[in-house]
Length: 307
Length: 323
Image (cartoon, rainbow over all chains, first blue to last red; front, side):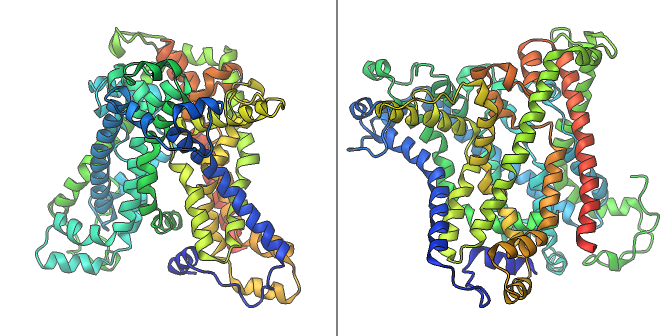
């Protein structure tokens, strides 16, 4: 069966085939129940967190710290958190690292994948083998730390980007995708006088938008979620990204020093504030996700079938 | 590059390349490929520096490394660090925890995406299935900090569940921070986060099963269970076996950030794994050389396991295809 038809069936309706008897009502009910439970297990925690972050402080305290469905909605917790303190700074840092990092990673990965996808590239094979070997053995924490230290990148934002610049899996997926582009197309453009960069930007990239979008999302998510590299490479807590700050305030329960101006909020340390930080830390992902999600099947399927 | 063919392969092998002279010199190939090589360069530099260059950092494993003295100034100790590994109960505890968590994941996490894929596969309404798919893929993209925080908010001592239990006069349950429940909790978190995403590959495999097989078995009177057991599962067995073996090869790696975030709450006895051991004894404890040796030990054994698993998978995979 071809990739296309699998993809069509994954995304579209799959009408009940003629041989399959119409399922009995209890079977349908059981299946529906299972789907509802699975969906609820994922969604309810998010719901509680968002509801608690939006509830007024009094209501949160009155209900014992948790709100499933707020009686009234206030954005006070977000206003407190974004008033210009630690959380605001960390959010901006994460956003900057994510934007710059994703652009650099995507650029390097697309360029390298394109070169490696061209047949007969001088030195292409050894380079590809070099990349594939990293699936088997990646240098651990301390050797990577020593390289970052040698390059003088400790305590700089580059330390969050350069050590994870190119992901071998993403590279192989994109290379597989590029190989599927008809070579005639590329040759025709070159006969018309287009250089490699022009071919890449004008022909290959537009034809691979879905795959590049998925890989871009993978990179952006990795940078936004970047956590341990920040702990390892950044001693200066004023440079911490949002995930590290989140751990500090929500997991370890440290007070929100300097992030909440009004004294009352500091004393109560209401869960609303913590939950607002939590929501902020996942908001960009939840916002971008629906737009890229429909490409997953295409991207992942191609990669999976190729490997 | 010494193994390159003396003559360029026939033009047919290079579909889409202009016909090449039979013995094209390397110099002219270099001139032809220069723009492509320039595109390759930044990525190549990354791999050379951060993967291959970093491997040299492992020399520290043979030293009594002191950051202040550097690699050149620190004292060489030969294999002393490796000898210490075998006599150190803390390392063996970390190995035991790593393997235990991996095996728990193999038994309880591994079937979850498959079960979810079977459920999704049986849904004929495209809109319903697409909605559930979108929902269950989402946690894969949420950071471990958030996932651990969510679990703590729901199941923790002051969390939603215990607040509710307490309000209704019921016994509260001690899940977060309880060493006895730590490893099952870790597996539950992995299921919550990744079972949905993992189902994508099984679902794709399920849609490649030949419909005629189902039809024939239905005509023979096979019910739901027999179709599952005799058609569905055998048809996707190669991919199940492949993923299972690859997971076995990865047995020394358990989610580092996930464990790191929760280690201090329950203590190293149950929560120390090899990667956290390297961090705590090396980066925090200052025992750099020893921690690097443990990391190298893990890396080499892990590479051997992954390599062996791939070999086995290939062998079984071929049998699965051609038998």
